[in-house]
Image (cartoon, rainbow, N blue to C red; front, top):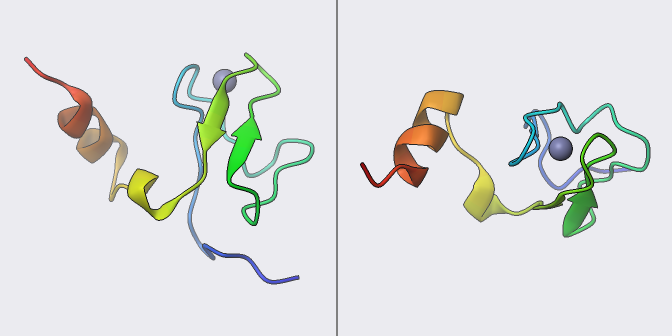
Length: 62
Ligand SMILES: [Zn+2]
């Protein structure tokens, strides 16, 4: 099995759960439904940030 994004940690966009460990997580899929909150997270290069801070800065308009 090869991963599309080795060494990348995925976190739920809504609740912040760690996705890599969740049932059914496979980064060959384009989306992963969070088992904690049901949010469909998109698993793509566009959603990779260097850090959580980066993510929040990018998504904050204020
Ligand atoms: Zn979630």
